[in-house]
Length: 133
Ligand SMILES: [Fe+2]
Ligand SMILES: [Fe+2]
Image (cartoon, rainbow, N blue to C red):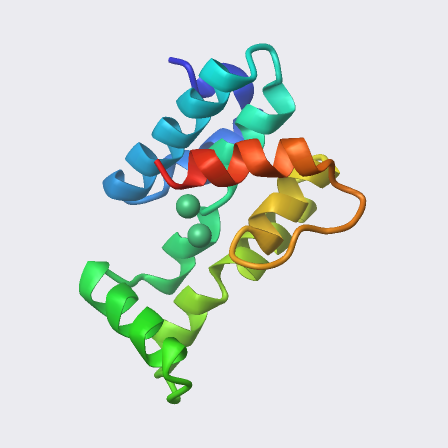
């Protein structure tokens, strides 16, 4: 399968432990990258792995939507929702511990925030467009 060929066995274990909707989003994102930037396995890997932190919160679609809405109006969120809102940081820490390359870690950490200065603007744009899939 497309995703498996891009991941180490440890990364694949994390990847495949995601809920099905998150897996589908990750694969769509990586396929989008492959269409726009063929051969850029680093970008495809970043797209595949960017949301792995979501699974750590154990939240479904309703809690995720509620967490996002509460954060937008700056209201406090329960712990599981807070964990969902921090999925970028949590995923990045996990990917860093697995030895993933900087681009993969940085996109996981900052994909809902600001591009790190050392990451190419074009690469970041490809990843953000893929994340919108
Ligand atoms: Fe995300
Ligand atoms: Fe995403």
